[in-house]
Image (cartoon, rainbow, N blue to C red; front, side, top):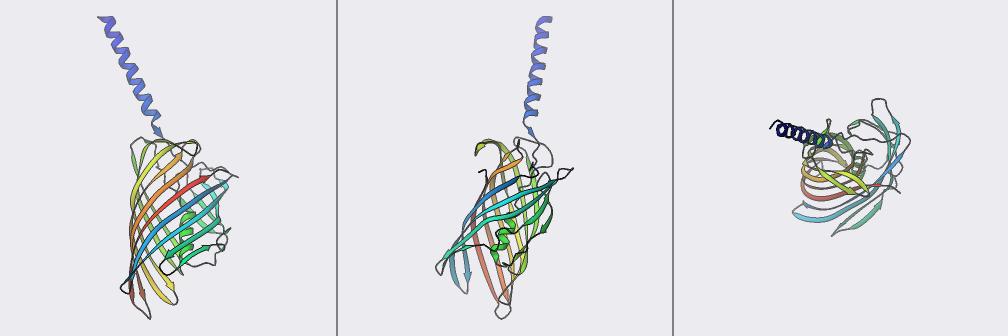
Length: 281
């Protein structure tokens, strides 16, 4: 009997050890590990549809953008913060409606550098414009948002199935004014998946966005307000500390109020899909 009790106790201890080991293996510390002197490039493709109503008439259009962002790691500080110089290698935007079909190569934005300092979990600590941009249209604001698009990682270690929150606030120059953009996300560590040859952690997220701002166009003041719902999946290589891919959709409702010589309110609804991937060639 004593022998059986000893064996049972031994098996119980083994089971507890295996269980604790498995739990430890399922705990991950997610941080960015950009290396000093290296250059990273990301391709971003955006496609969507927008419907707006103006003077009683409904207008539908499709929009798209293809951009390549270059991130040069200028320095990695002792506390782990990273100094990145970001610029565009290319930027092409398109818009198609009943009235026009336009494709623009945003050459004024290519090569214009911005310096960012980000924390290991992706918080933008500071931003400095190195090369000023003459373009003041709405697309320049979208480009700025693309440059600073760092997914927020959890402050603590997380296990499979755990969720953390991320709130980002950003102010974007657009059309002679400024737009304040807020995003509040819930992110959940869902599992593991192979992506572009990398062993990645799969992180699903959902949340809401809000935009408010005052713009200028042809001497008229425009007030923008809007809310949206976003969902997506981030694929993160925890060993290399790099976002490999980020796929998301955004559905938003916005209102633009025009004051001045004409008073007008333009409601807009938009659905957009964005795919961002690491380029390794």
